[in-house]
Length: 142
Image 1 (cartoon, rainbow, N blue to C red):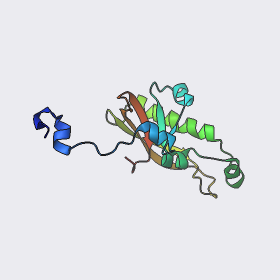
Image 2 (cartoon, helix red, strand yellow; image 1 turned 90 degrees about the horizontal axis):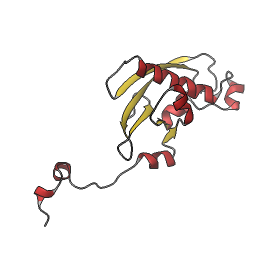
Image 3 (cartoon, rainbow, N blue to C red; image 1 turned 60 degrees about the horizontal axis):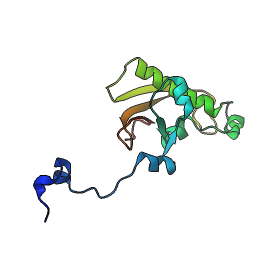
């Protein structure tokens, strides 16, 4: 039997890790979507991803959406999200690791032509190797 005094406090209290799900796995499976080089253009120094739900709500836009609703460009929508997130960080609204920010975007619902306000959340946390990374998500997501 192992000596409990040699276990880390976390393992001693919670027990051994049963399973892990890495950020890299979430990106590979499409649960997180990388903002790519555009995040650096906006001014972020750390890697930025959006959750699939935040991407679907605020970034995703096709030519068919433009024909049905109003002309939009997916890269332009991504720029808007990243710019507003960057602005919120620079103006210091929120805690040290989390900030809520608002964005005007046309909902991708097949009929809207006017922008509506949506709130998003930006979280700074550790990546798979402890490095700082940024995740943009809907307020009800963790």
